[in-house]
Image (cartoon, rainbow, N blue to C red; front, side, top):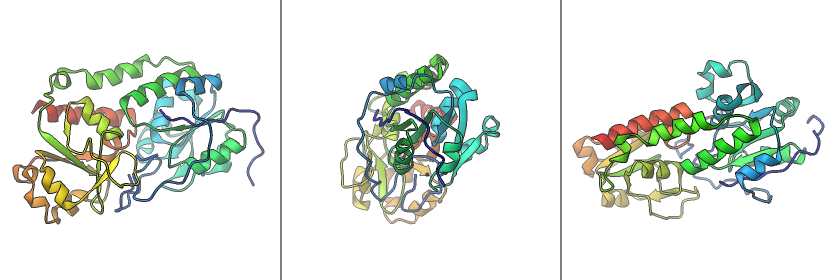
Amino acid sequence: MKIKFKPLLQLGAVISTATVLACTASVSNEDSPTVSTEPSEQQAEQPATDTTDTLLEINTANRVVALTSLSADLTANLSADRLVGIPGSRILQQDSRFADIQTVSQDRTEPDLEKIVELQPDLVMGAKGFHDKALQKLADLDIPVLTVEINSWENLRELTTALAVALEADPQPLLDRYDACLSLPAVENAATDGPSTLVLVSRQPILAPNKNSWAGDFLEQFNIQNLAADLQGESAIDGYVTLSAEKVIETNPDNVMVVDTGNDLLEQLKSEPFWSQLKATEDGSVYSFDYFGLINPGSIASIEETCAQLKEQVSK
């Protein structure tokens, strides 16, 4: 877990804004770390610390602003009355729990710093590479900020446990939900030499997650052979590799998982000459997965939905 934090000294005067997916076909996903074909802004240098130690330094967090849907959902599950600001995410907009909470960002615009400061938060959580500028400005106002990168289930467990300490809440119900996702017989009995799989998240360029991404770790938890797991490349996105059409043909996966990013990626891929040459397309073993859950954790519910879909895969 990579954390960058500046402790609270005093609330500054009111000012007078993570991914994990905006591919080249631009996804209008709202709140969270995105996979982009452009390098992220360079982060300001601040000392990195362990997640638990960092949150313990904050002591009790009574007023929390979450700039990603996942951090908002975690806070709501742990201590809903302490959540005072959320992103304008479609996941949260569809959930009545968040109906009366102040929205501090919308779509892919920068978070509204004035709104955030007016909420007098003692903790603002954002995603590495997506909220760097906004978090730095808030840190300069002596507002505690937490920059989080979730690339694995272990990261998720660490953040959940540490956040629970700051919120004076019990993390066990959430940890039990995580375990339920991964501990059913369908997962435990999944063959390590099962069908090979390639996950495609964009078309131009063709991007696939390797083992250093949330998606890559998710597949590993289910013993799914990710053909891009050990691949490295020149991609500017950590945890993702750029593949040529020739490389896709060479891997020739048994299964293809196409990520639904709201831009009809599957239909776009069907127009590519390489598509019809794959074993997976010939066998009808092409599966659509939502962006939230597999690529961007999004929320606990979206993670659980992805778990259920992957269990179907390994049970076949």
